Image (cartoon, rainbow over all chains, first blue to last red):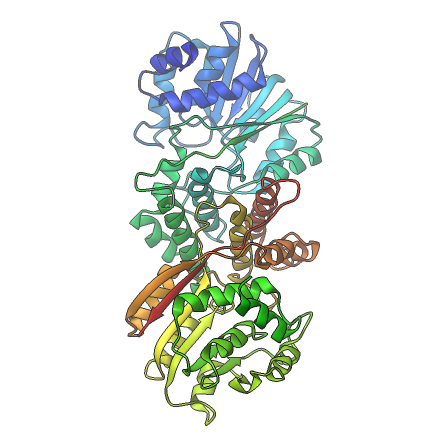
Length: 282
Length: 282
């Protein structure tokens, strides 16, 4: 663990694991953000990335972090609790949190006219649809100098231990692609590929500067979380209560594929979280 | 290549590749069918498996091979052409072909009252639904002493080169799980897992004797065929003309995942066909 990760994990005091912090430090190491910048973070959730951004920006920088989820959403710590905890750290005054969607926020008096960076870090797969992302990318034109997006890659890059995470993501996206699904409990709503993100950004007028890949640190928990969810009894029950038989058969096969892919890794599976794809645009 | 494969490939005279024949010989080597038996083969298609079964059964055995597809279905050789070719081989009198679904055939005067073996070799994923398989397994009770099923496994068993085939199968099954799809062009209609096959067989009263896995021979073309299909322009166009936007986004992500999984294998990808799972029941 680097000194930065030790500092940050200790700053958040149990609010996030060292692996989650390490992963976000790895992203910023690629992005080389200018200290003192103003960042708009879209879909901040519990604020893991907000914390890392605030730390790296230094005392002249600021992160405005927005998320439409209610403050009492999330477990074991709610968004509100986590954000309060972050605000109380020694770098808490570098962060401001708003419960808002992007368009409402940009239209409000709280928003800067132009940010140095707007970023979506692992919030794209939370979006309900490609169309929502398309609108967001259009709305951001003229409101930020640089656009940064980080999301999991659909490519396991030869690492068989990442296959269960990929298949679990496909399974969750299958459920959430059904019509009339109001249940928004999954961490993965739609698996939007890097090809699609690039195409949408181009349509919205963004010019791609760079694409990169960041491997997940060993121990990053996302694979375990998503696979565990898909293999839970509640998940199967929910799937079967929301689809026609043909759809359910397909969904069941995906769940079986997740189960088999975990078995092949061994008696004590060490699942690997998918690599993250990074894009930056001006 | 074993002498059997050389003999069989030469018997069929270009009707099938040595890899396809080798794969079916590998299946029968596991199953150890008693020579002289009477087999009912369900979903024989172009008859690759019919040929191998007839060869292995010897001159006292017989394969009754049924398929509901029209005789002019299939390319580059139609079912009718391939079956005629097989009938003209020196072991052609060990095979009889009928264009029929299972229930109609069992109800007809053409069927034996009881077969030694009924087998489905790579025909399960051609079926439109789990429900159709359920009915077939029930209809076969009392009409065969032994039930044999071979179908691809949803498990790539640690071989990254088989991932494109798995993802292409998921993609085709996604399309065919949509409601009101009348297009039956895909080789894969539904990815029914080995867990589901076992559960259905048990419900129908079958007692599982053995499960085995057969690796595909290097060069077996199925992975190439299915991946090529999913990555074709026509496939994307068809997908986009049959779904709501949410469904299409999911389908597009699956196609992108197939494309990426082929790229990781290298500049000259050698795709591997999925392993085959075998079950036998009495």
